[in-house]
Image (cartoon, rainbow, N blue to C red; front, side):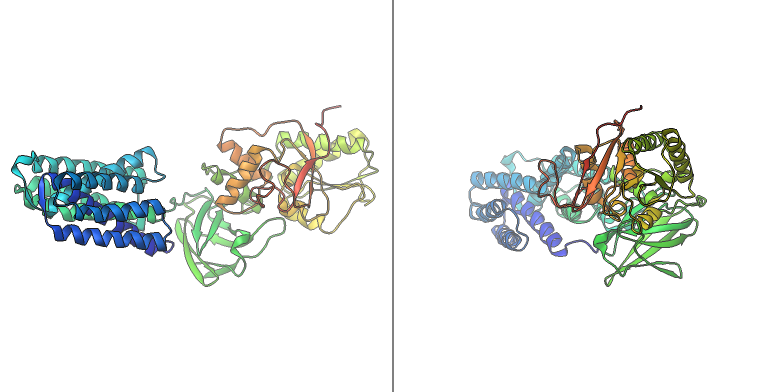
Length: 537
């Protein structure tokens, strides 16, 4: 509840509830005698709330003016049955429109029910007497309204989707619970009491509780998903996104975006870890050891403190899974809305990457590079990639040497690549394996070239980048893009083409010239093709 705008929430709840009262008084005037003082108190109070909301919250001026005019017109016209009824009906329609702005069809339907029940119930509860000749049948109306309110409450519970401990452990869940209990109590009162006036006056308490909860819901943040063992955990704490990966027992990385700044600490049990940068990765990272089962991580940042609930279950630790590239892959699935257990990319060399590396070596052979230096690592992918490159170099007659007058081909992971690229320079350029397409890696050298099967400037690639940037703030990576595409049932398939990043502040895609860095693969820069499609020769 710390992120709730309390003033906005209070004004919304009071404004919608007051409007329902005034609308009910006006709408039911055709069949009942209303007390003028109740109409004036509700009308003037609601008009004042509308004015304050327009100034403080900058709500739509048209809605605010219409609100003030209608809520003051109802008490003015109360002596006439026809005009007050039409004004009350108009005010009810305005209330539905205001409450349902931006809602889906189901949410709009539920909003309409809440407004209709509140308007009719409050109107009959505040009536002085009911006209015998009006045709009003208060008890059937009460029963219909109570049943409709219970149905709307259940519908709101289904829409919320919090059928677990979040129903009683989060502000949003408790509000939904109050709404449902209020609706059920109205039905119980309606069935238990026989005297019509008592039904409306006692039941008004339950209607008021349900309406207050309904009005408050849009202003309360949705609760986070419950942690699932083995699936990277994305949450919010201390005013920043937090990613916990791989979310298993043992060693885990807690990741924060660049926007979170520095000086962040993570407390796990009696241990405190400081979030620090990792070469080849963006943002900061803290290393923690998660015990089996549920536990909490306490995040401290810039004077703020928050808690992230984690649940490692009884899943065993997977050596090497606590790696920034693994976390980026997991983040891609989360950004696509389909988080899933992720196999760390460095556990195997994909056939498509092996093919790209062969074509990359063939491309270098065509450039007649005098020698090739290969830098890998001891991961399964790194060892396999080194073997593929060496075999293709032998096949193409390219000498293997560390001579800087030749070319460098980096097939390691992010961290080692960042270290290497920042220390050396080769005359025929720095050439990288496809999975090293990640801004902190490629930006560690003045120039690099990568064999890719997609254009990082195309719509899908930019959509992934923008989606991930909105969800967390990290720059894109090939590992994340693959998980994002997999979750969407798409393939990143195409001819291998060599691309080179360039550190220039330009975006060569229509509509993105002034779009900042959001979604760009190379922030403050671009990436362009420097070869045609590479084919087997």
